[in-house]
Length: 353
Image 1 (tube, rainbow, N blue to C red):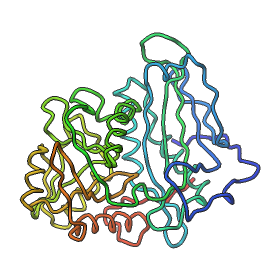
Image 2 (image 1 turned 90 degrees about the horizontal axis):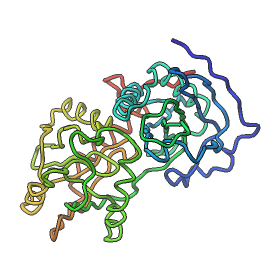
Image 3 (image 1 turned 180 degrees about the horizontal axis):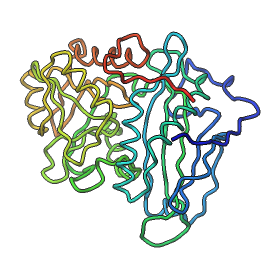
Image 4 (image 1 turned 90 degrees about the vertical axis):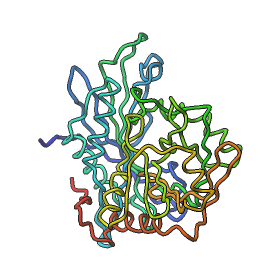
């Protein structure tokens, strides 16, 4: 199905004010955004318009009861200047899985994809040319009923904006694992990309940064010993010649970069295992020398090598000169995204209106 979007363009672009050689992550917005309203059981008022604040009533249910979900995607450019999207259909599926868990309406996949393609094509001049940089795409949905009372909203707003970004991490990441705070439990909302999950992570993440660490590596909420994920990414371990990552158990986000790297590793013949992993197992592997690499995967983080992991009184330091697998992963996934590496799985699509 093809949808008609009302388009209002800015009178003058702000792109000339942007220093593409100095792009902090998440600070610079492009000119336009896509907006749609869910009213009377249907998505309507489909438009692309200049980025601007959206007036919101103080009784908006999203503020009080947390019905808010989002996705994170990236667009890159090839040598010919085409705007490229990486597996956008999987983001549509994941957004709708989050919507179902949060009792929110689904966005038809064809509407989601048409909106992404149209907006990215309009804003393709904002895609940074530097390696490791990209146009970050943020689709999100939130409740808009002006009502106080715990129930699902009847109305919603779906918005997509885009922003040029540099690398999320510019140095190897230092992780702190702790068993006081937990991120999610099976049966909760851990596998949904919902705003409250990230709000709940802020206190322990702030505490970790005060100790000199970049992120928390979360343990399960029941036994407090099984590794789940990091606040901004899924997590992988290379132990001897095996690549290991926690299996999806309903409390871990089903990362699209994670999924893609598992397919690429298996295609390359690496020994790959998805299974429960205890923090003690990883600390012991680090002390014995069997732990070769730790790295995270995510849309924002891409492939982020880990240099330190602390748990209780033990800190494991990784030798960054040995990080062959994560380096190959980083070069490969970025190469696929800008078409300098063959896309044998057909993951890349050109953004076309």
